[in-house]
Image 1 (cartoon, helix red, strand yellow):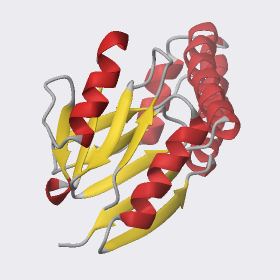
Image 2: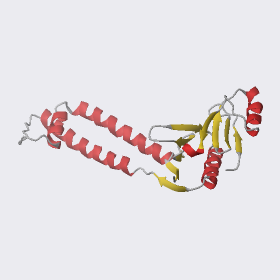
Image 3: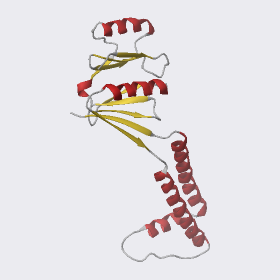
Image 4: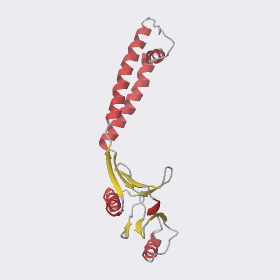
Length: 199
C-alpha cells in the first residue's frame, strides 16, 4: 500500500494516523514530538509514541457513521480504534483502506428503526391490556388463570395487581425509552461500512 499520514489537531482524535510499509499506526504524541514521530515513520524507524498494527493481522475494518472512530478488527476479541471526530477525515481514511487494501470485500448495512418501532407497538399493546386488567381489579373483578403453564396472561395479571398508577409508570418509562431510541436512530442512523480481508 502507498504510504499515507493524517494529522488531527482536535483533542478527541488520534493526533497521528498513518499507513507505512504495510503497517497502520495511530497515537497521540505531544505536540512538540509530532514532527520527529513523522520523520521517524518516513525514515522507516519504529516509534514508541505510536501503536502499530501489521495489515497482515487484520481481519476486517468497520466504520459506523454514528461513531467517532474506525474499528480495526484482528480477531474475535481483538480490535483497535482509530479515533477521528471529523466525519470527512474519517470517510477519507476508510475510503483509503477500501481503495488500497488488496483482496477485500466491501459491505454496507443501513440500520433502520423497524425493530424499535415494533417494540414500541408491542409495549403499547401490552400496556393497554395490563392497565385494563388493573382497572378491573381495582373495581373488584377477580381473575383466574387456568392451566399449569404460565403464559403472557399470567404475566399481565401479575403486573396488573400493582395497580393502574404503577402499571402506567412502568410502561410509561419503557415507552419513553423506546421513543428516545427511535429518535436517536432516525436523527443519527447507524450506517455501517465493512471491509473484510480475504485470506
